[in-house]
Length: 292
Ligand code: AMP
Image 1: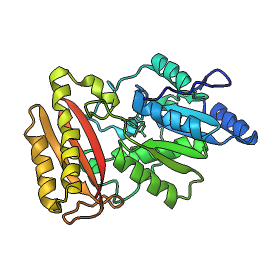
Image 2 (image 1 turned 45 degrees about the horizontal axis):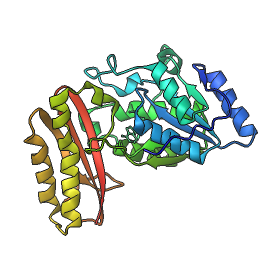
Image 3 (image 1 turned 90 degrees about the vertical axis):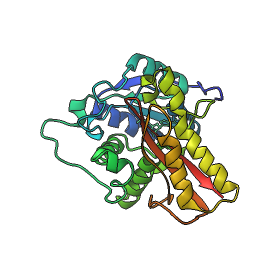
């Protein structure tokens, strides 16, 4: 990865308070600064840092939020043990050029009796939505709240979570949010594994098995760019490739329309390969835009 820009003007500010956060953004915008927001759940890696770096390059003032959002985790999921390391994250945010870190408590975001949710119907029910019911309702609710607390000019998301960025762009358009959503490419390990905060859960054997996700995506891409047009067969081969890998429990591996996320059986010049699997006890996702 290219060296991170570290030409910050002032020391990193960290706040847990909504009112202070709003005031800081208001002051920056009053000075004429374009504000960028990078929402994260912490346990930062080079994928997150690439979003902060993009915001640093494209905006005058950069806010990173660090909030492990309970409403996007199912009851059997890893909310309690999700990796948290604020001290390291703050250091990384500072080095990557953030101006402010917003790190609210769960009670600040969801006070007792909280009852308001926003949902993008349809898109939220397929793929991840099938395996993680309610997940995207939690995501869209927290992102809308974060954008109300940090009324940024630009908000940055990773292509790594393809369905998430599709849903957030749709919410932003349909609710007329005064923000421009920017999507940054997936950062991978040299061997192809997409960076994820959950990769720390993998042992050495699982780490090797996890390569099956990116492998089946890249193979599908090579086949389509090489001229194959039998999309339904390629979809089945993707799933088989995942399913045959030891320690991997495949959930889905398919080719979808880039906007509607509908599974495709016929060739399109632009398709998205999407995969999800449990590798040991760790659930991983990946995707690849395939242009023929
Ligand atoms: P998370 O902390 O997992 O909620 O992710 C925060 C943001 O970082 C989301 O917009 C993700 O899509 C993005 N992100 C996560 N992993 C990567 C990656 N490997 N490359 C690029 N962006 C990523």
